Image 1: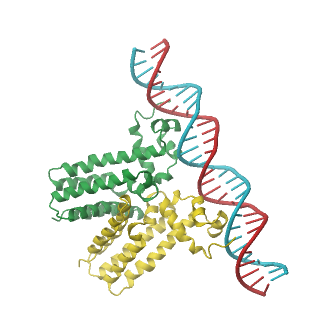
Image 2: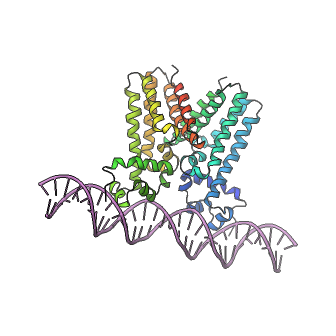
Image 3: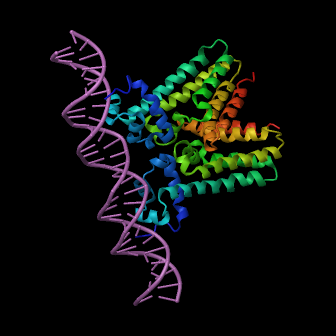
Length: 186
Length: 186
DNA sequence: TGCTTTCTGTACCAATCGGTACAACAAAGG
DNA sequence: CCTTTGTTGTACCGATTGGTACAGAAAGCA
């Protein structure tokens, strides 16, 4: 019985990938067991709350990544344009240039949303707020900062769905470029 | 034993609503049975192929609605601007002003996509093609017609996800207005 | 070395899953 | 009225679902 993981945090990315592929309700414990290489004993040791706790852990992990790699640079970068540029680069990286879908978005669509309402709401809200602030610092005035932020965040989501529907990741990267252009007009 | 439906087509909208709420894999036959008021006998009488056939029927129904109410007006309206305006109105109506999510988009996200790849691909592709043609007729030149069409279709998807994540349908209707503005510039 | 805590595999549970079989019923045509 | 065709409910199937119990192995610490 060799130990497979030294801490719970190492399992989370594997869980995330499974949830991305099958959705929350579609991800079965047997699949999770197979892919993580962990029996039910171990899984319930790390996540006593079962699937729900796994889902929450995955959402927390995503939120953390975005806070570190997207929201904070947006807020703290001296040059707001640089922060926004960083956001688009990090976003492209995170979604594997369009080959990976948004887990939070997938959770948001079906009844899974009700279980994780707060995390899902917070993720998008934080993104919009951070981007809006950066745009305002960049010179966007009145409601335009907020509107553009909403359009960009929603546009990224939509481009992910669209690219996946067409099985063509380039549709995502190209959409990203055009969304970035929307943030450049003074 | 009173007959509940005179034809299969009447069941499909009920199925669609269930799939919207739970996703494809999350929609159980018992839930379907309860909501339609139909026992398994009747369900498998109308849909011998089981859940898969129900899913396909629902997708066909959506495709049909969009062909009639969105794609055709886009193609055949003498004034392309009128066709586009019609598209936005019909879209807002179809998605209940943002209170309803996109079934095709939800199917596109998880492994459900693989079962219905063709229908999902076709839905978005047809929409983009029809809108692109209308934009071109309206004077959009070069790659701009195609790009704007992609941005608008993806933007609608994203706005639906975003509005649902915030539990605020107005985010959708407002996003629609701004997307429409993108189609107005000559 | 021993003791304790952390981790792991397996057996098991009731409930539910999608799907099948079939007999009983209703409606329509003659 | 009888037959045919279409529709319905129910009982049932094996498989899988998320979750629990628990004995025992591995690792940490004394």
